[in-house]
Length: 201
Image 1 (tube, rainbow, N blue to C red):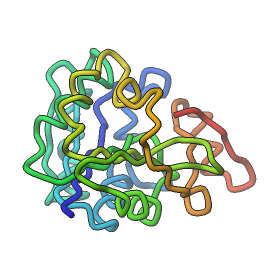
Image 2 (image 1 turned 90 degrees about the horizontal axis):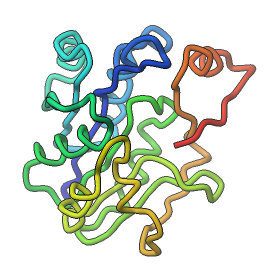
Image 3 (image 1 turned 45 degrees about the vertical axis):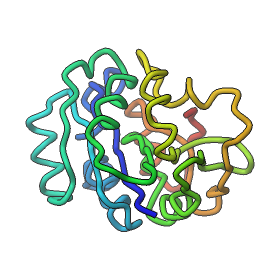
């Protein structure tokens, strides 16, 4: 089973004040942290989609994971849907793809590998946190055309997955957190072990 890793890291991070791909957590850019997780989870190939400050982000991606394929979504400003379409279009022939968002630093190698292990060519799977659905998401290759067609504006795979009853739930709440990082305050809470955040997807 060949499962690719697709990292969406194109956004401008307006609420953060900078592209989240370049924001650092514990001295490491979020994009580098995510790429290391995908690599350590054994996902091959790895594709990262960039947009805002693409040239600077490209340098960070190359330093973090020279084996990763970098794609710049020309219409990244239209939202996550555009980034997802660009990433899916850049994939070689694979059995499935695991999609990770750059602003979910609480999802590391163990959770990524666990969800990826549920991949099939005709299946769908996603991480679950005490029964609550979250990221990452695994899309079997037979679903990729449908996902790309449904992606628009800031709606990535969510539109395609909504209401489906055939999504395999993979519990990762024991090794990961589902919170995303949208603002400097969110980042500060993550870096402070005495506090926690409970963000959305």
